Length: 240
Image 1: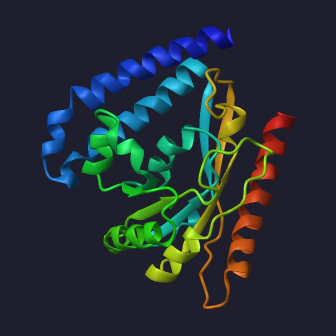
Image 2: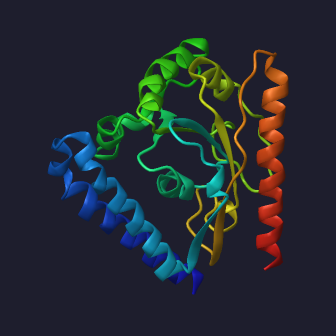
Image 3: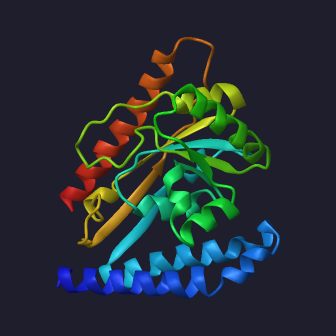
C-alpha cells in the first residue's frame, strides 16, 4: 500500500507542478508581490496531496516565537518536505540555495523571479559576502531568509557539522536567528521514493541573537537548540 500511495503521489506531484508552475507561468510577469500566489497555490496543493494520498499531516508548534519584521530562519534539513512547507511558516521567504539549481528549467526561473538567494559552493568568504548583499534588502522588506546550517539534507539521527554562514549573516544584518527543529525525514526520507504516514512536526524555538564574541558560543547554542528539539520530535514520532 505504501508503494502504491507513494507512486500515486509522485505522479500527482509532477502533474501538479506542470499545472501550476508551467500553465501559470505568464502570471509571474505581474509585479512580484502580485505573483506570489502562484507559489503559495503550488505549496498548499502539495501539502493537500501528501495528506490525502500519503496520510502525511503537518503540524507547526511555537509560532509565538516568530519575531516581527525580517529574521533569519535556521532550520534542520532532513528532506524535500521543508523546502515547501517552510513557505507556510514564513510567507514569501528567501531560501539560500546552490547556484546550480538556477539552470533547472522552469524551477530555476521561479527561484530567480522570486528573489531566492543563490550561493556558489566552495567559494568561501566570497560566497558569504554575496549572500549578505542579497539578503539585506530582503530582510529590510520584513521577509525571512531561510538557511540550512548543515548545508544539506541529513538523515534522522545522523551527525553533520553546522557551518558558520548563519552567524556571519546575523552579524552583518543584525537580524535575530530563529532555530527550527523538525522530524520530516522519518516520513519523507532524503532522496527517498517511499512516503510513510504520520505527522510531520515543525517546532519554532526561541530566537537567538549574535553578540560580538567568537564563533563558538553562538554556533554551539544554535546546534544544541536544534539538535535537542529534533531528537525529542523524532522520539515522539517513533513512539506513536
